[in-house]
Image 1 (cartoon, rainbow, N blue to C red):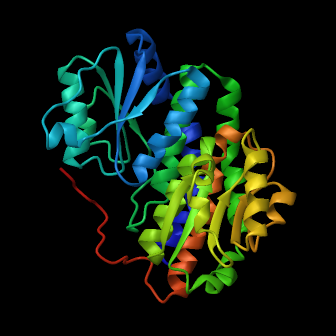
Image 2: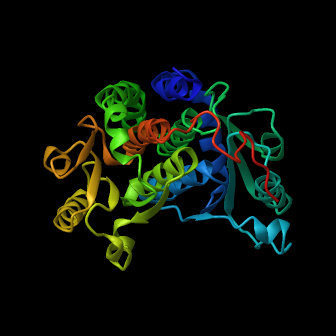
Length: 345
């Protein structure tokens, strides 16, 4: 078993540790946010961390009615015209905490007197030093280039902060139960090593989700791109229906992320349409009828609230990307042109 697969399989343990042993940091951050009467949130991130920020947009918007925007770091580092801020919590999310453009957003926000927060797996990083508050993901060292356990730890940090902001014992209990659901998800998708060779010729496709799992569509697309060199484009199902569905022809691969929840009926209906058009459907869902639409089902355990499903829905996508890389003859531990830490200006 290579290091990437080991880290994929470590995720239940990582989330169990974060949700049960490190609660104080989320309580402290929530207290500071309430004290400053934050009205909006601005998040700077890149790559996988950007997808954790997308999750925050939906989760904090839904649970706290907070407007959450993604920062444009080039305005800070290239154009040197950062936005004027007021009553804003500014967050940098970065596994390594070393990318200068993310640090610059936090530096400027602190200079403007805004409350700043770092979500990172490296508590002594430049990002952590720049921010007033730090949430350590405690994922342990991640050796593989492709981020897996650090991504789900970032999602958990976003969700734990939300639970602390709402003083929600119910949300915390849901998060503490997730490691078992994550383990069941990994076990239920052991078959993907056998399914992956069927997609060895795959060069392009779409990944579709909506709502809380908009981030999951982006993250799965990123993983199959960086590990298996597949040009998979992520879409909201609503955006997909506004034009890109024209791409679909017999055999066209579509990964549909459709856990139970408010957006599930729309996604199921889209799955029916895609099947009618001959798409090769890979379906991530806990719903039997939706999984039945799939050429390749990627099952999830039932009973996880929709807002928490991004922590389990991404796991089949990670496994698929790993196995697809191997099926194509690539080394998932050494994706071409990539390094573990990327620093952008």
